[in-house]
Length: 374
Ligand SMILES: Cc1ncc(COP(=O)(O)O)c(C=O)c1O
Image 1 (cartoon, helix red, strand yellow):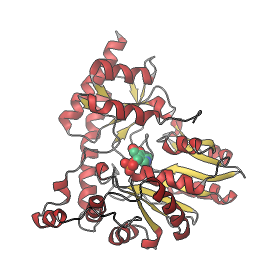
Image 2 (cartoon, rainbow, N blue to C red; image 1 turned 30 degrees about the horizontal axis):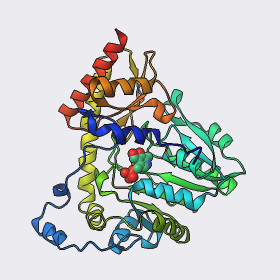
Image 3 (cartoon, rainbow, N blue to C red; image 1 turned 90 degrees about the horizontal axis):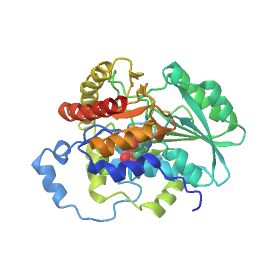
């Protein structure tokens, strides 16, 4: 494919994240263990008898029912279980876009949807979260980006990399823009449940608009990225069309993942996992904040509402990719570069980590800034 748009951040992470002493490039919290999920030896015994069948391809019924219960009015027919939110997003685009169609996507953003839409031959316009207004949605840019040709509007809420949660009025503006032109809405809600300042889960777009795919996974708020379980919630006929794409990509999630995910989203385990995640986020952010403050006016930040990532701007004349490459090579530590989100002079720093590890990583970043300033 001559004009293939690589996923620059994921390329860097997959090549480098296992070669560093300190990986502060992830967006989720320190992962949970199998033991966190199945503490009871009886449950382990049951799992040991699991046959490695191809599980029900769109998700085993109990899992789809439990996911549906998180979305008022939804049933298992509204749910397709995927391999992570990344597959959910990809097959959503394959279902909702044709080559040549126009898509309007929020930026800054995890650039999967942006890049995959380009790779599918769509033309992509962007609208902004405004850095000068604490990452508030720029409704004028939204209304400019969404035109009569727009087939799909895509948002990420809570947002990666800023951690910003949209207000209800902003969500209404997104729906109104999509509705004005009859476009579909793709809402990546993978950080809902990972709130820093409240125990209230971020409201979903589900129920606000009919032409909607609400995508999510167990990777962030649940602390289970390696389970590789995500989902789409949408109208049954469109979800069935997405399932037809799922058959071409992964067929089904791994057998044990269907079973363990069913436990993770159960009414008794889910709140414990969310509490664990919020604990990491709430203990980690003050450490990062204190560290940033110890650097005088080097950093400025809009504190994140959710997610285990902060997106500070730094005041030193070095390109963010150059900084990250030097940090990797010279200090054996990793963060994501502002460039990975098309916003230079920023770093995305993960803080939902054990305190000693987080402090160790921040020390290396400090050393890198000090070397550059010398
Ligand atoms: C906004 C967003 N969507 C989707 C994904 C992919 O997540 P998953 O592990 O569920 O595939 C990520 C991962 O960082 C993300 O940040």
